[in-house]
Length: 53
Image 1 (spheres, helix red, strand yellow):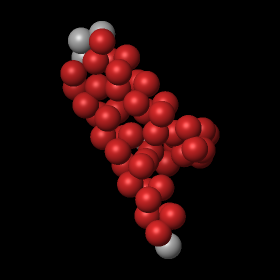
Image 2 (cartoon, helix red, strand yellow):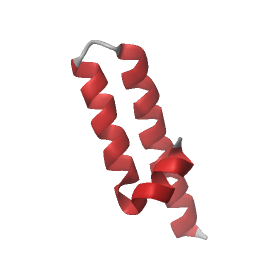
Image 3 (cartoon, helix red, strand yellow):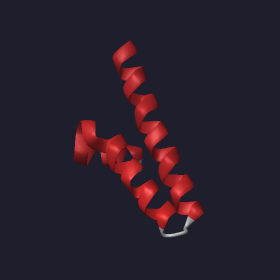
């Protein structure tokens, strides 16, 4: 999912994943909120890796 978000939304991918995490958290779906938080962190990690190389 991180790759899909990066491909479609570029630099906004982590922010979009954060949005979905917050949305699902507010709707009471902790599992999906947790999953989207993981995607956001993975996007940020991939960006750090790209910047370091």
